[in-house]
Length: 462
Ligand SMILES: Cc1ncc(COP(=O)(O)O)c(C=O)c1O
Image: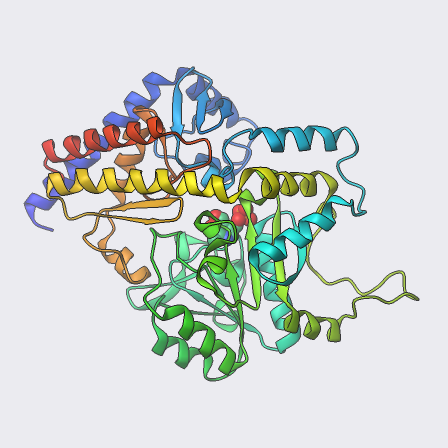
């Protein structure tokens, strides 16, 4: 590091400190709640993820409505984080509120199906492809089930993932490549798992590495997002998905496509938009409008292979073999009513059109600010999702992100944004629009981004 680099790093740290101090001044009530939360919560908040915001402590929410979140200090935010996609429908969408209120008064969970599930199953197939579905309580759970099924029907142990991925708290997907070595992402504790035995990790968009990794025919499934969204947005290279499908088929490896985040591409996710042919499709988060839910669907051939292992019906045996996935609350009446409302009235094709239009405008504005500043940054927009990255061109893989990322600059951006009344996903520069996002909200982002660029340029940290 040169002396100039050191000075720049120190200035950046001072800017982060200043924003965190401003954050605390603006939010005394959240600060007090955070202190109180330490008394009873393991990591201060009901979920440890809630503490991972750049202000130094989380804001405590008073009310979230549409595309806005007001905190307990009365501070309003335009919300482009949207619960890291869980609130892609917007907060408290009317149709979901109505459906959930009705269903909760009629019983939330009985471990029995409701007739709503019939419409939901048919609609999932209409949107995502003709699959056989199972509901879970989270996308994590759906991914775990997909992996388990892949192992059951292939008899193989390994799961292949792409470096920089995130698929929930799924052991097999915690691996990454850093400085050429395979390790565990984000300092995750190994948890007594022999990662080498159960997981293989390669770089995204690397077809040669894929061929080599699948050649020994010991990989049960590839688990992949169609566009990587969890280490900055990494688009697939031209032809990558065709190759991924062809190579997995040749190797007898199942292809699991995780649409949990890419549901933002359109009503049937990236899969429907681009004609992908996964063996298993997974989604979650937004699918039930914020009520915990996940889904996975097996293509008919894969379902038949599973039924050959565990038959679909067995009339004489009440205690049929259980499958080792899912849970008591999976597919409960409340969740199913919420999914029905989301698919019927909220995440509709016209709603997507508005979301994408606003995302396009947001991306164009941000690109305009970048062009004017001359900074070597770029913006990626796919469907309703936008990513601002502090590097000149979109990364091809996790290695590019690791090499080019500026974590402290991201921290500063997040803290600054919150102080200026904007929430974005706290892990990198990702924004999402929802049906309730307005042109006014988008314009606020353009102004705040412009101020952020001025701040970092004037301070000489970029
Ligand atoms: C692509 C992807 N899959 C799965 C998950 C897990 O979702 P959940 O935490 O709701 O189980 C996430 C969470 O961020 C995700 O980004």
